[in-house]
Structure formats: structure tokens, C-alpha cells
Amino acid sequence: MFLVILAIILVVVGLILFGVGKVKDGNQVYKVRRYSAIPFVLAFILLLMGSVRTVDPGQVAIPVSFGQTSAPLGSGMHVVAPWTALNGLSIRTDEYTMTSANGEGQVNGNDSVEVKGADGATGHVDATVLYHLNEADASRVYNELGVSYQDKLVRPTIRTCIRDAYAAVPMIQAVTDKRGDIESSTFSCIEKGVNHRGFTLESVQLRKVSLEQQVQKAIDDKVAAQQAAQQKTFELQAATQDAEKKRIESLATADGQQIIKCGGHPETVDGVTKIVPNVTEKCENKLTPEFLEWFYIDMLKSMVGSPNHDTIIIPSKPDGGQDQNLQIQVPANK
Image: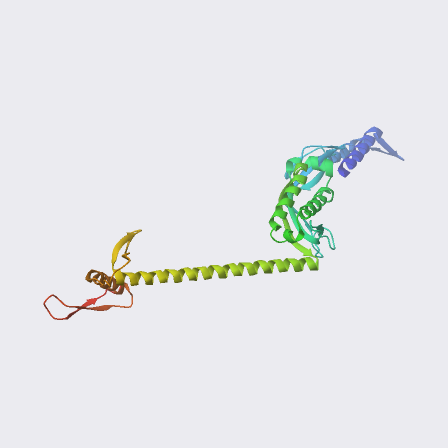
């Protein structure tokens, strides 16, 4: 606007020079009309300079001409009327922080949100909200809220939604098992409050909750009780597993004794063949040759598969012959 005013002054000067034509100073006559074109040229240059505008990256400019706004201009160079004012608004991700820490956030001093739970307990919440202005809605936001939309819309909406979320549940639950629900409820409330006004909510971070001393003690006691209950559950599971292991070992011992007493027979379960005891009410010891031979072969297999042996000596007695020993070399990379 300054350039426009200066250009108008130059045009007026040019018109005066053109109208006067000549100026007489004693015997001298000066033809000033010939210089009248200079102010017009300078005025044109100033108007041209005032028409070329640049919008910075991450900004939109709202053109205002004679009290009327136009569609927002994106980043880059634009040609507008020299009397049009451009009002810049940021469309980058912006944050609004309310905290009790000094030197942080938009308001100096303790700016945390005071909340009261459904049980009447009170506390103070530090919060940070990330959002951005929608470029397409920039003109509407400028008309309705101006450039100070943080104080008029964002801040009161955040504080109200945080208070409402904590008021719905007891304070002890709000800072323990209901913390995620509180953040979700706060996000939904703020989103509903700002999105239809031309903004997009990105995230809500409830960073810290300061509680009264007695409420904090109750929370600490609750957490300690939960940890003790988890420890008891773990110990019970360990005891159950140990009892099951002993039961299986007892069953295996009983099966072995039953096989020695009554004999056994092979059964295949899930592709694995095992010797199971014969189930009879009365029987004598039946260490049959077949069972002993199977048991002997099974033990040899275990020895061959063990990494602790490289040579195995097997005693044998061929039919009608004397005792002999067979020596078997076990491959090192078996």
C-alpha cells in the first residue's frame, strides 16, 4: 500500500508539471512540461513492483482488497493488484503445548490443564497437540478467526476436551489401565472441535499427570498389588509344570515296572513306535527274550547317536561258539 500511495503522489506531481508547462525565474523561462513524464514512469515502476509478490514455502497468502478476501495463494511468485494486501498463514504442522515446565509451551509459567476425575480426585496434565491448517480452508479461517486462531479455537478446545475425558472415569483408572482410553477420547473430542473449522488434527500427547499425594499413593499401592498377583500367578504356573513333570515321570516308572512284570507290546502314536505295558490283572514277571532283545538294540541306538562315543565294543556269543567282542568305529560327523 505504501508503494501505491507513493505512485499516486508521483502521478499528481506529473500532472502538475504537465499543467504548469513553463516556470519563469527572472529573465529565465524553464519548460517543466518536458519533465512531466518522469513522475509517470516512476509511478508505473512502483506499481509494477507492488504487483509482484512472493509467498514463502509452507505458507498461504490471503489476498484482501477493499475489505474482501479472495482465494488463498500458494507458495511461489504471484501477480496481484498493487493495492491488494497479502496476509500469510502457515500450513505446516504446528504444535500447541500446555505444561507446568517453565520456558516450554506458548504460555509462560504453569499452563498445565487442571482436571478432576469421576471420583473427585484432582490433578494437572501436561499435553502437546499437533495439527495443521488446511490450505483450501485458509480464507474461511482468516474471515472467521483471523490470524490468532490458536487463542480463539485451538487452546480452549484442547483444555475442554482434556477435562471432559478425565471427568468420565475415576482418576486412579485414568492414569493406569484407562490411560489409552483417555487419549483416544481426547483425540476424538478435539478432532470434532477443530476439523470442521478448517484444521486437521494429527496427534494428542498426554505427556505427564501430576496427582495429589494420597491419590499417587493409592496408584502406587494398586500397581504393587498387580505385580504381586502376577508373581503369584507365575509361581503357580511353575509349580503346576513341576507337578506335571513329576506325574509324567511317575507314569513312566510305573509303565516300566508293568512291562517288567507283565510284558509289553509295540504301539505307534504320531509316527513314533513305543513299547507299552500289557494290561492284565494278574501276571508273573515276563522279561521275555524278545523284550530284552528290543531293549538291547534300543540302548545301542542311543549310544551310537551320542556325541560322547567314537568306539563301541559289543559283547556277543554266536550260536555254539565262545564269547566274542565286536568293535565298531562310530564316524566323527555322525
